[in-house]
Length: 292
Image (cartoon, rainbow, N blue to C red; front, side, top):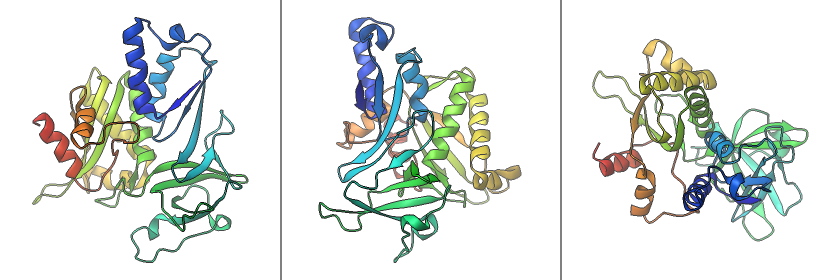
């Protein structure tokens, strides 16, 4: 078995295949059984890992842990959701999305949470942390027992036009677009394009592909339709292009995101590309780097 953040594990596997000349990782490790992942959503990377391990016997298990504690683990490999660990020295509270921007937000106990709603996680631990926000957002998939999925980060969302797009939405939309088009994505980030004069706004995606789609225009339309289907708020704002224009994609060369992280002194397994931002700071830095 091996465990790690998918983004950096992909880099490791590609280097191993380069050095060994093998076509997949099962030729390197024929008895490989389990990949344990966390840190970022596995959804955009699942297809790549199935290419690394072309066998249904290989299992993929998600965990949710951080420096501050071990919160949840996938106890059923065939079901969505991670079992929340309730006897691990951690007391949990949950801040509804409507309260995130409040100066004194109301936090809910486990007894008050509802399935399908976004919450910011708050923890108090027996190691001394008191009402600490790790920065993650979660959605309950079940309350009997309590199972969650990580939906994004409290600072990683796009809501410039009331669309309330979370990382979980973009990961799913992108994964489905890749599955239908045969494309593979290495990294991506999304930011709003704000109203300028009479022009409408929208979303701009920067994508670094492992394998580009044959028809980028068709891929863009498919991605936009997927996002509308997944997020009803985005769909409402996109209705007849009245409030938002279709999303646009800027393709960047191989290595762009790693070079950007390196320039910021954040290259390594503890650092991740911000998927969404409600400002254009990150995206403008990346575009300037590639001269776009």
